[in-house]
Image (cartoon, rainbow, N blue to C red; front, side, top):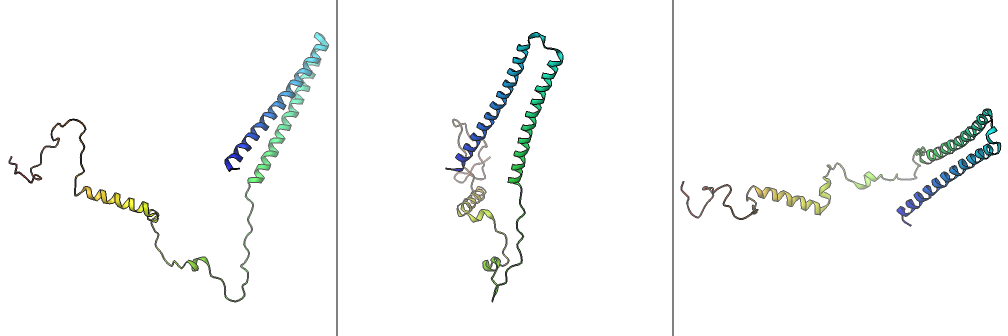
Length: 174
């Protein structure tokens, strides 16, 4: 199983859980409404205003309890997440253990680089290095030889005219 598949399954499970919770909430609300409507029907129109107020109060209390439960669940979930993702203090390394005989060398001593200058990152990859060298040579060559200008339409003569200083075969007189 790849990481992407695992993430997708986790996401789908989370969505299913959300839908189940929403369904439970809807069912509880329906039960409350049916209970209220059943009591109203049984008493008919003789229900007093005070009884209606009491029923409203009861339904509000039950809703308040439900919201409190949801809030507690959310807080517990956040606390669990915070605990999972919080940084735990790492153990501070104690003093190095005593070695009998000669002490071990460090990685810096083993590499034996001394004082070396910082090298260009692009020159590490030979293909990129040669590509950059070629690009530089092409740019330098433009100073010696003009690049070929392609025709865009039918021949319409020279746009710049003829430069008499560059013609070599026949002398052009002004």
